[in-house]
Image (cartoon, rainbow, N blue to C red; front, side):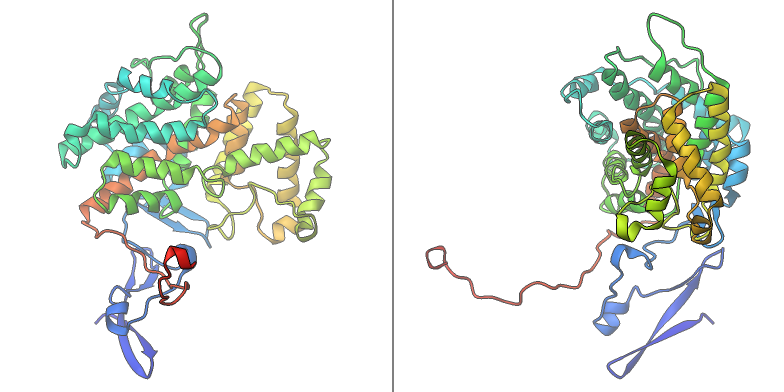
Length: 427
């Protein structure tokens, strides 16, 4: 017999079933709360509200655990390619050799973007933020593939392939124009990440050599960002998709949600903070002291601690090695990165940070890697979006397959009560 929770309101008692997930996370099912009691819950930011059942990602913030479809993030980052992880998230299992070959080949065949989309791109100001451009062009894809809108089965798989194949291509356009360079077309002879790097950094006047250390670092970064349970952008994708909006519109909404500095824009904030410290003389000890006295100074260190992980961010442990490898291999002499190393040292060893578990998180190290690779700060969140795309697709697909009802949060109204209308001449 299922357990129930008892709620007493106005002298009446009501029973609600309890649920337990496969990793023993417990919940009260209050789907019928308003119907039974006339009450709704108030949960600002949905911090205690489960809006769905999902079999994609498990996250335990207290224990520092992150798993995709039951696989530890540590194993996936060490042993898998990004496209293997994408397949796992979207279809539920790691691909066989034949499945992977077909999946990868399909993506290679769809990397080109319709030339008419270039006309839309050319209409944006040169200084337009790449995230705004990316969200707009992904939304525009629904117009270019309107014959497939709302389709299921094999045609949904084609939507998925197109998004995975074309998003990196579109992403590079903003970067190349910001540099005053011609855009590069994809080379389907290259693997997924080398192809992206080639589109980003190759020039028509010289050969571009793809560094395997850089490829591996990006592979790890994209895997670590591939999904993160019901975060702001993922919840946005599911909420928009619950209206049966097409996959392009839903993913575009997720990109817009990711853009915010409290979400995907955090790694950009890290580098901007480091630049500010450098501009003020580069005194790391001064800013560490300011962070310790934040109530007085108002200074906050970006890239330390995490809203969900209460102990440590498991992704940060993995990406720290990738950052160390990249900096060592490239031999970069950058004062901003030296400041980052100083802050990292303080956070890992200073009792103030250690006792409060304010360790460097994935945003801190990803910003360092992107800067070392020569990727400008306004492209950092675009890189995040490329990594998060498989998770958004998987969540959208799961939501559709589960035939979830349209999302419709409630509210506690705090505005004026009924008022008498006064005509314009008497106001």
